[in-house]
Image (cartoon, rainbow, N blue to C red; front, side, top):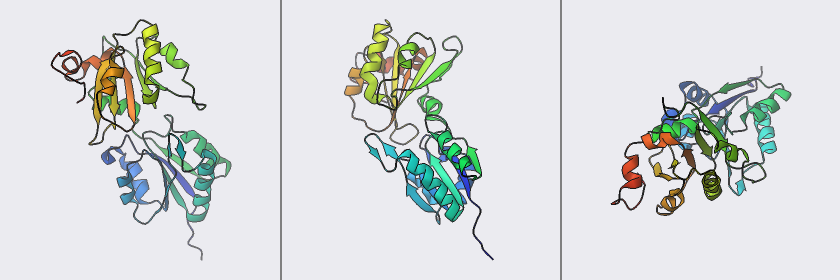
Amino acid sequence: MSTKEHPQISLVGAGPGDVELISVKGLNRLKKANVVLYDALVNEELLTYAPTARKIFVGKRKGFKAYEQEQINQLMVDSANEFGHVVRLKGGDSFVFGRGMEEILFARQHRIPTEVIPGISSSISVPALAEIPVTHRGISNSFLVLSATLADGALNPELKKATELNATVIILMGITQLPKIVELYQTANKGQTPVSLVYNGSLETQQEVFGTIDTIIEQNEQVSVSGPGVIVIGEVVSLAGNYHEKVFSESSSCCIS
């Protein structure tokens, strides 16, 4: 009698980085996985919860791809057919600029059962961890989440439209586009709008840079920091602890927490 497991794919959001911010359900699926396909923004400590699973890095970074997306799709399906339960582990939430639906649709075409386990998106959690609410009564009634760059590398044209709103604007994958983003806001006469750059959100290396549209590039240049960053633009940024001290104090030489 064959003991081969039925193919199954669990699309699991791993959260912003801290291993404790994955959901209980996501962690339970990870423990039962036969194969784990994981991305670059996944904290690799999570892989210890799948000690017997095959682990395959399929991450993408700027200028580097372990696999093309089409290859990831096929690898996911092939692994499910050969080994059974596959966990596709993605940073943040799989449906927020994570191309998760593309993978689900591909699996459906191959008649493989799938489930989606949401993750905590960095777009909301990282500002929160920097004590920046994305909405606040009397200040911001809405928030907008944008990717800074399109698939072809061009600046997202919706960023220009965002400058017309009073909403909190959260920009992912945008640090390298910061000068162009600043230019858009300055053109819209919003140079005094508070801004924060939050690097390595939820990790021990988390760092925040505070400023305004007019000062944020200079403030960012004064610090030594690397890693993925989230840009938060809007009046709610000024609610962060010590914001005014960090931005306006004459005795402060930089704006890093």
